[in-house]
Image 1: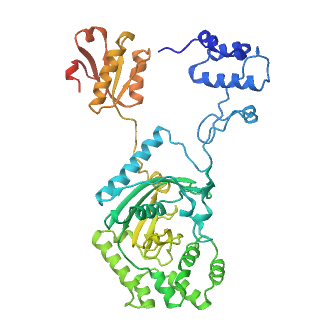
Image 2: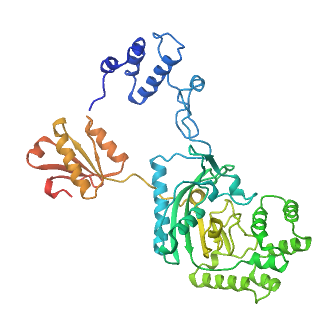
Image 3: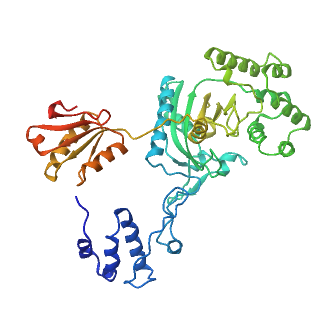
Length: 471
């Protein structure tokens, strides 16, 4: 239906807006895409008068913000009724082109999960804070978006998915059979410094197997130097910071645990090892840790992945719940932070009151992989895809056009139904913009014969079709 004219709008305005009728009339004289801006400024003028009602309203400024949207003018910043249209720092908007990319990425996540026979699950974005609060010094605890809700409960936006997975496994108890193979794709939140590939919100793909056991090299090293088992998580958190802080600070933190100088020297020596053979020389061939790693690399060889992995004893991951082999994935040039990471967590469930069940899994974020694909020129060109545009050549044909659109949608086809009064030239341009496959014109003479005009927009061929032949 056509837009309302200025007179019809002025008739329904409250009396307090009548003094600004000239400003409103001006608003309806500008192009459509500026109408809302002019109206906003008119109403702002009413709340905070600066000019007389007869003065022409200011021109809309077209300064762009960091997301490409209109930024508020200086006067708007002073006006508390106008908000910043940019998303909060570290977060993102997802306009159609970004949603197409996200859908493509998530489709790949789901397809890989399906090929490995995993089932999809999900959890609340808002969880109990206690689910994520662990020992002091654990980085993820310090990055929580947490608060007290109106019921006095401490809650947090989930920073990761694994604790929620553990909670669900405990909740299901013996009603599910092991092993479980579950995957999830969910939004996570962490208040951390934003860099390339690191945001305060991101989507993460997790794949976890519950009910398969394993061991860890670092545990064998701690046992060799008589370091108490309850210090394992704290040691992991410190070691994970080796590339972020000076080695002298790492040693000081280990001494503060406390760990002896001899143990620290031996631990750092092991963490510098980059081959299994050298690890075997230090720990011996009889230990479970070396045997487990040998089996892992043997399986990788048979899977055809051996050229993609290398041993690195310094990879321990920063989360204190890991208890077995851990891993991280990077681009070969090392220009970006970790693409993915994970490992074994056999004792996580007991921290929430459940029975320990051996488990392993990984998290794969959406931000770094997209940056890497951009750098390599591997992102697909994802354009809109619409099967049909249906356009009536007259207002009295809008009903038949809507009926045709409904029938096509029932057959699983996407339809853009144009009911506005537009020229045919505009319809063709619109069809090109949304990458429509065909145009269906509902004309008076064709409709009286029970037919419509169909134009294939790729071949430019057109012909009349009976309604029952339209599919």
